Length: 193
Image 1 (cartoon, rainbow, N blue to C red):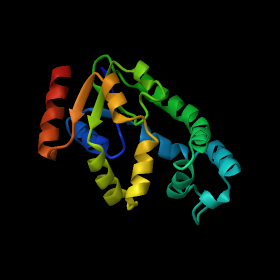
Image 2: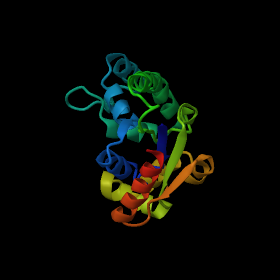
Image 3: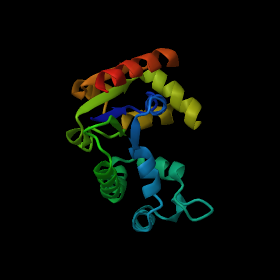
Image 4: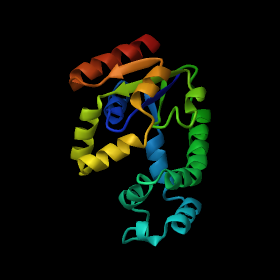
């Protein structure tokens, strides 16, 4: 069975994935794939050409924080970046899925943009991790060392969580303790194994 896991920024997808890994579930991490794609020569060339060399670090590699400051302030630039990265990301995900036996084991595709890029059509079931906006902002500020305003901007570039919830097969509330979250995930996995 292939599960599509999503949620908003700082809702706890990474924590859920760690719990799933501990339970022996195979994870395909779209964010990790996206990070690796930013090292692909063709993608890097297109990004440099489109956004300039000021988004590079001292080693000449893409500085994700600098790039983020550019694209999270401009939807057109974000869409342009996605036009360079998404085809490569989808190709890698497709290749990984071809290798995995989703008929006989549980596999989770962790994809922040699951609904936005129609990856939900490729999975058997969708799970959305939920945390309220105040919690998200607090986590982003702490985790990424951003201001409250920058955190809100990041949240606002994504599909609203309530829209994701409407589309979800399963909603996992992550407002409580990690212990409580672990129990919820364990029950979901046991029902599907």
